[in-house]
Length: 457
Image (cartoon, rainbow, N blue to C red; front, top):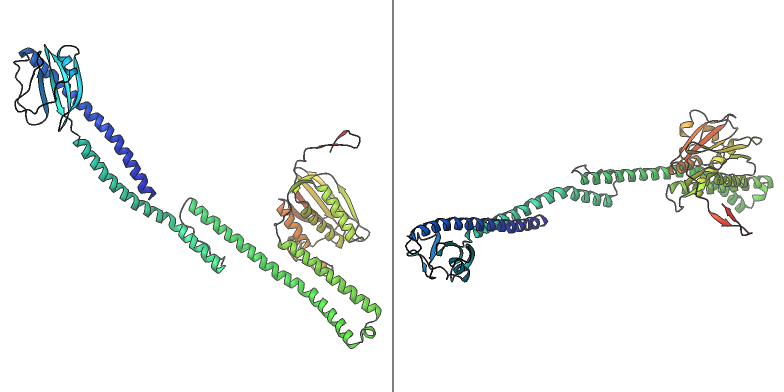
């Protein structure tokens, strides 16, 4: 419909312009012909005299002639249709007031184009019937052509629209099918061109991302179930033992106070381990989704806060800080959690008399954080999988933890556009290195001190 309407408007405008141009051209041609015929008749009339000049018989169509005598009377060829009366302006031409005159006159039936030219003591007139038939025929032809173009444009537009929208229809059907079946494995065929192809490719990329997300969720659920199985089994067995002994009334005799205290401590440790694992699973499952806003912050403040939390959680951990002020753009809580996990991981391996060393410095356009311990280090075979979820080296099986701490570090660092690596420290232990893009510090703000002076913060 849009194509047909556009063609109709185009044909109408073209018809109007062409009709005007054709009318002007025909009128100009007719006037030139009238002038030429008038000059020939005037020359003949001047030689023979207006009263005696031989007027050719009227041929039945075409031009009409008339001679205006000095007394105002007129002569016309025999059999010629009567022309409109001589106008006042034409009479003045015959009287010598002006040389010529082009005018249009209407009679009862026809319209005339009349040219009056001074000749001798009078004037001659040559006229032609105004014929609109060429323009009418032209208009009829344009109308027929316009109708054919409208029909053809509508058919072509419909064909082009259906052909162009066919990939969209198939894309819609495929999207509906995916929504109903929840099958993310079927890619939509890449067809069409231009914007449609880019749209299909974008949707296929979205489906691939959804497949990866579903696969990651499934792996996380499977890994979580596997990791939860051992502590839950141990916790259930210990609780069942206590319940069974309590029902028999032999709890005090079967379990001495020392054994009962050790069992209750084990239960508390297992519950704590489950709580930590659940919190880490929740944090990991959320991925990059967070309500925390990004801000420009001093990473040194984050490192100091994380070290303080680590000391409060495990008083036996000694943390040696060597930090300088480096500004980054990030989420404070997520970065603090990552730094805390690094310190906790190093604290598990570092001997009691060796502190965990935490260093922060600016290195080029990056903020570099290093955490190293004096433990046994990481085997070369374990280095590629250090940041994998739930991965724990054989030497770490007996230590507390879920294997999620460094995975969370990796996710936070990736979300901030950084890079986490592992190497061997100078003390022989593990050196975990995090590089984050540095940011320009915020502009200083002025504040009033207690004495009324202005200080820069």
